[in-house]
Image 1 (tube, rainbow over the protein chains, first blue to last red):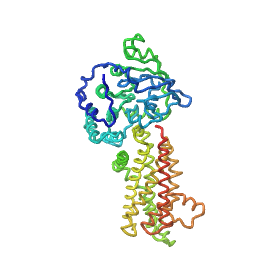
Image 2: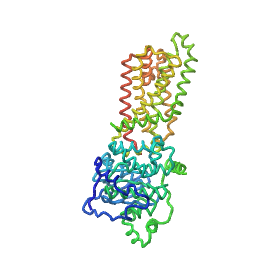
Image 3: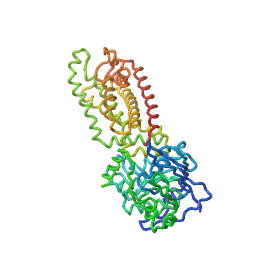
Image 4: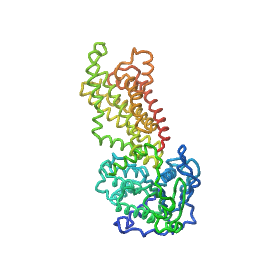
Length: 307
Length: 248
C-alpha cells in the first residue's frame, strides 16, 4: 500500500480529497467499516511517545506513557475523564511542555521544533476555539491564512466544507448566533481545512447528532485513505472508535492499560463489544475530573450554551 | 505578512461590527469634553490660560486612544476565555507575527476611535490651528495608539483572568490618564508630580497632539516624538516577549 503524505503546499492532494466521490455522499455511503490497518512495519512511526510524564504540581496527569502511532493510521485514545488524554494531546501539539520523557512527531521534537511540528498537524480541540464575533466563513478563511493555504484553494475548500457540514446557508452569520451543534461542526470543518499529516481530534463529536457524527467520520476516513492523513482521536463513544480506529489505546489514571485493535481488546478481555472491553479494563467507577475552578466554570458555561 | 494582515483585519472587522460598543465607549470622552470643557472653562480662562476646550480636546482624544488601545490589547483575555487564542497559538506562525497583527490591529481600532472623538470635539467648538496640521496629528495619534496597544498586549499576556481588570484600570490606566497633562497644564506642579508626569508616555503623546493641533506645547516636539517612539519600541519588544511566554 502506498501512502501519500500531504505536504503543506502540495495542493494536488487536497484536490484529490475534494474530488473524492464520497466527499459529497449522503450519510449511508462511506468508507468500508474498519478498513485494513496499514501495515507499516517498514516505515518509522509518525508519533513516538516514550516514558512521557506530565505533572501539575502534586498531580501526575500523565504517568510514564509510551506508545507509537504508525503512519497512515487512525489511532484512538480512550479513557475515563481526567485520564490524561487531553494533556497528552496538548503535549503532542506543542501547547504544553512535558515534565519528563520524549516525544517525537514526524521525526521532530514538539518541545524544541514547535513551528515545524505545527506545520504538520491539525487540531480540533475539546473546548470551543472559534472566534464568536466572526462569521463561519471568516473563521475558516482566517484558519486557512494561518496555515498558509493559497487563497483559491482556501476558498474552494471552505465552501465545500461548509456544504459538507450543512452550514452553507449560515456562512455569513456570526458564530455567536450558532447553536452548540453548529459551532462544533464548524470547528471540525475548520480543523479539516488544511491537510495536515497528523490530525488530532479531541472528543470532536461531543454534542453532535448522529447525522453529523456519521458525516464527520466518513470524511475523516476519506482524508485518511486518500491523503494518508494520520488521525489521533479521543472519544467517549465506543462505537466511533470501533468504527474508525485501526488501533486503540486505553489510558487510565495517566497510564496506558491496553493497546491494540478493537478485535484484540475484545479478545483479551473476553468480551463481545468494545464498550464491555473498555469497562473490563478501566472498571465501572465514575471518575472525578481533576480540574481547576476555571475549567469547571468553562464546562458549566459550555453546557449552558449547548442547551 | 498575510497573517499580520488577516489578524489586523479581524480587529478592524470586529470594531465595525459592534456599533453599540463604538458608541458606548464615546460616553466618557463626550462627558469629559462637555462637563469639564464647559464647566471648568470659565475658571481656566480667568486664570489667563485661554480656552479650556482648546486645551482639553487633545487630552480627551489622547484619553480615548489610551483606553481603547489598552482594552483591545487586553482583549487577549477574552480570546483566552473563549478559546480562540489556542487556535492561533497552535498555528504554524511565529508568535511575533501574531502579536504584531493583533497589536497593530488594536492600535488601528484605537486610532479610529480617536478620530471619532476628534470629530466630536470639532462639533463642540474645538478649532485646530490649521487644516494642514491634521495629518500630522493623526500620525501622533497612531503612535500613541501603538504605545498603549503594546501595553495592553503585555497586560493581556501576563494576566490569566479578567479578575485583574479592575486593578489594571485603577492602578495603571487611570493614573496614566490623570498624570498625562490631558486635563491640566504641566508647568508649576509639585516636584513629585512633575517626576511622575515625565515618566508617563501619554504626557508626551498629549503634549505632541496639543502642540500640533493648537500650537501650545510644554516639551519640544522632537522630544515628544522621540519619547513616543522609544516607548512604543520598548513596549512592543516587551509585549512580544510576554506573548511568546503565554501558555494556553
